[in-house]
Length: 424
Image 1 (tube, rainbow, N blue to C red):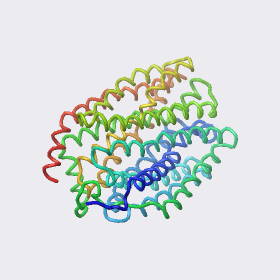
Image 2: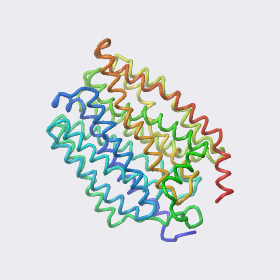
Image 3: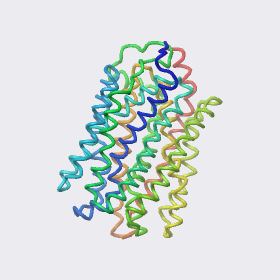
Image 4: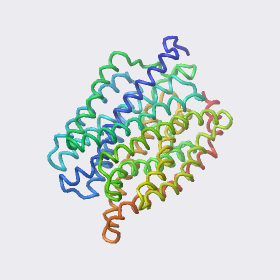
């Protein structure tokens, strides 16, 4: 099946606009990281409460509601779902700035999670419908740049606004672009026909139970989800606590932290993510297993750099050592989604993405920051100011466990893709 209306230029514009929307998503999601210490001092919160704000409270609703919204996205206009969701999380981010206590801020963060649940799965499915299986890692990696650009804006703008005008104003300022993007999407975003890139019309969208069983019975998908979830747990924990780590362990201001992390994660991470998608597609044409081997290789190489950075007492060394792991931190995104959408049927893509994100986020985003907060409180009695660095080292070690499951996924990947071709 072809659609001449979806020219290369239209596809590129669609990926670009979806990337900007994902950027707004990530800014509003992660702005709280650069503000944690200011919120802690203003409201008198514990690290466990901060972990709830930056992780579990957001993740429960973000991950859970993603499934019913994706169910609708496989049946209804994905464009409309994205616009409504984008508008909602932007408004709820503004409301975060008006919270007067922990309970109100917690509820507002939950509202952000509810809104953000509706943008990613439809976006993944739209991109997969526009690009063939051997081309998907690159556009999905470009989409994943929203993570790095979003973090750059959250840390740079959030740190500066927080320092000069306070954390409440920071929430309100970063939410405004999302409302503008909703208007742009309303008039210019186009939803591709389902199954466009697969050369045949998608069948009727299956129910949740059927999609869940399909994933559960696929050896590669089972291991891919476990491995990617552990990768996400490490990544979200680090992102949530790195600003606070530099403020506490290295006595930096939020402006200084924002500038450093914007450079490392925003620019360095953006380059790493884009190159990762490119090399995954390129190496994957030789052997599709490189989509997963590349994630394993960089996770294991990056681990000693992360541990060294967290334990460093010299600020310069901490920054230098962090450069590599944060540059490749989001590289898993493009290849993981590319393999997911290669292994599922076109009519179940939004729902499959939502299931992946549900598991990734309920554990990774929900428990990653919370685990570090709990461990930091637990270690504080014995280690004082070093409690947070030791908690972050403990989290980083999960990369070894993640690599094992991704290796298992790579072992069965080719056979499962061949079986997909036989049943198409």
